[in-house]
Length: 68
Image 1: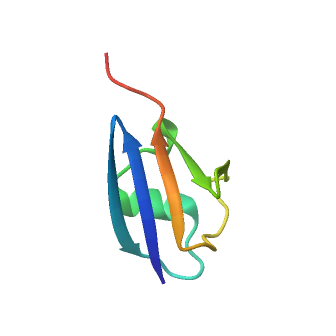
Image 2: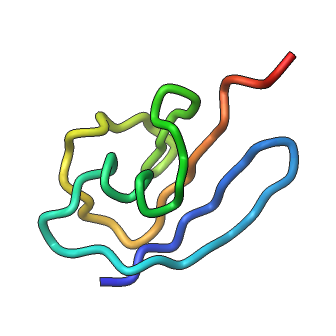
């Protein structure tokens, strides 16, 4: 299935990636090359656990850690 991902990290980037039906949000982050410690994943505006299976076609990833 295609998953639409909006990445918010100062600027907003939108990407579409391919995910298997049993992929977790952690798998999606790995495919994006995003460290799960640095972000919050939202579905319908609510945080989701990394080990939950992806079941929606659109998520938002918000970077919460910045360098400095």
